[in-house]
Image (cartoon, rainbow, N blue to C red; front, side):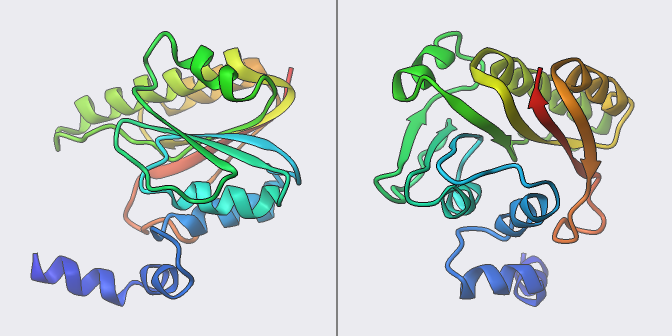
Length: 198
């Protein structure tokens, strides 16, 4: 445990997040994704799937500006950010979730997800869980995202990876994959970006 704490303190993005008041180092992943792909525009309404502890919502609010709105979803609570942040505590697999989101805003411009399942340490099982979660997020995006809307989802390099990319290509005009510099070097995580929902 002591070694883990020392590694975190030595992590440049962890220290930067503390200094810049982001709730987690993962904020910089979305900043990099935004700078490269311009996913979020001013005044956008963004749904943040797996929002806890709130760092992606913080970044999304900054890029969406004073007229933007972020709707965060997580099974874990997320502390209030601003009056432009609405939080729905619940499971992404809840059949009522699309209705709950649409009750906040009928027009959704962007769906983002840095969500990951609880990992067991058994690689094949964990990658299967991650793929299932990716499909849940993509299905939600299909239901709520307006035509021309954008999508970002964390996934993992595994036997399921290309299958997920193919599914995203069915929904979006342009699809990219990208691993931010702020991702841990030894992590198999990567991001799938879908631009302009068909």
